[in-house]
Image: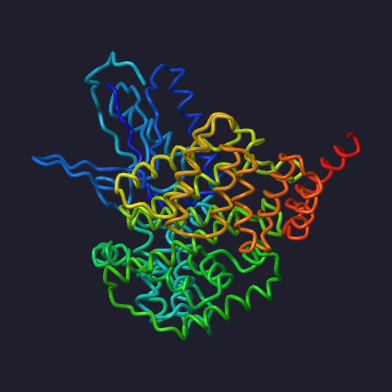
Length: 123
Length: 417
């Protein structure tokens, strides 16, 4: 089963990382994702641009375009990993590995997913 | 990251909002700062053992308030850290408090804090120093280093600024829309000043000052999250990101200035450019142009050009013309003249410069541009004169070195010819 590991954290804190701290976190995460890739379990990995770049479209009879993310929350969705996991247990273990590599605060939400257009080419 | 490092980062990230809320509570910068310091001390004691709170800002505000209410004076005598029991019931208190601290309040709190530091009554140097100290939490020696003054001098500058601000009346009620817009504009201006202080590296070596650019961008993003639909805040943030994206290419290994046309565009930071272009796109949708948006749009044209030869100078000239209307200034006209030179040649540009001469008698770049145009027109003696003036006006070793290079080229040409 494919799982999305959604990364939530305080954006203002992550933005306070120095370039060196940021690079160190990414390097440690790379060790984990490299291993997942070797096991053939790694799908797309994304870091979302800051929520300041977000635009929200409210659907309805008349759509409304709003500046900013969908919800104002204390912790923001900052990125995600798509990983193939045999079970929820394995997904939790993978999230733990990622969490150990990235020792900052925040949470990972683990959500199974299915692809609607598995053959769709990547842009 | 080590435990202490991530706590440090968490405190830095929470500082602007927590300070803003504490300022509203205590109605004075000194008390708010003291309460925040106290809360940080307790965080360093508590977080490694109890884990970080869910909402760091709410935790710091609550602890800061309580500490200032009962603890600060007593602690001064006793110097002991609070016992664990003092913090044990905090998790219960955190929930309701977090609800009390409305996001809407945070927004005006932070704006008020920034506005206080950027108060129009303060001279620019004091505004920047105060914002760096109070909002960003840089230490006095760090700020002193960035401005190339002694710690004592910087301490005095900040104290003077604080006293001056304390004497000004700044209302603590929720501001109305026009007042909010006015505060936002004042704060935006100081953020850009702060950024330029880091970017232009006047008199200082560049690497010391890069943190000023980073801080300015951090604060701009923070403000933008609170005011997500303000086109000029979008524009300002985009502008700073675009200029900062070139920081690695602007100086060579010896610290000499590398002109835009000679920069290695491979060194430009593509992440910053992508973020800036996304912000600019959002701003333009509002169809409410302003000076920051126009300047960002100009910077974006450079960022989009794969090579210098691909630069769309016609578009740049038009945008500078828009900027001249929005914000008339001889410096803007000088920049338009540079675009004119690329489009219609040095003679047309020199004609624009001649009109500006009386408005820019002490401006380094004016004489630098004038010299370069005269070289292109084959008038070396006049060019030499302009470069000499520029050399006398140079504010950093890098600026002076750049002009000397132009003079050397002229001299060599003369000897060869």
